[in-house]
Image 1 (cartoon, rainbow, N blue to C red):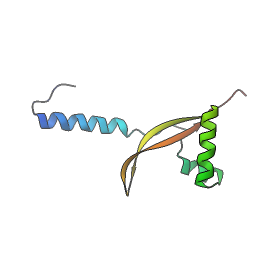
Image 2 (cartoon, helix red, strand yellow):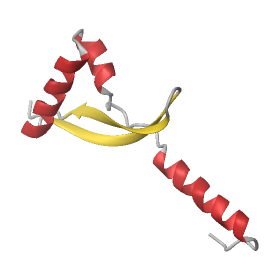
Image 3 (cartoon, helix red, strand yellow):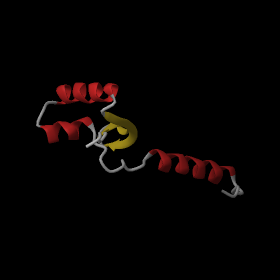
Image 4 (cartoon, rainbow, N blue to C red):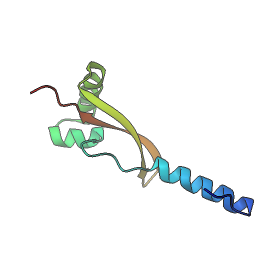
Length: 87
């Protein structure tokens, strides 16, 4: 990235880049605990425990994505994906 002439533009550009990097869309197959709870027709607490146990046992992958929430702004939120085993 070429260096801008003014410091204000330089910092603004750097912050814009960092913000764009941190707000990536989740990859295909990654869902939040709320989304998993809806799919499994279970409560949030029970689904969170299931996701954590599955992640600890190696049955799920977990990635953190920044999500824009209306009331609190941008927050890191864990997304989980099932790992396909041998068939």
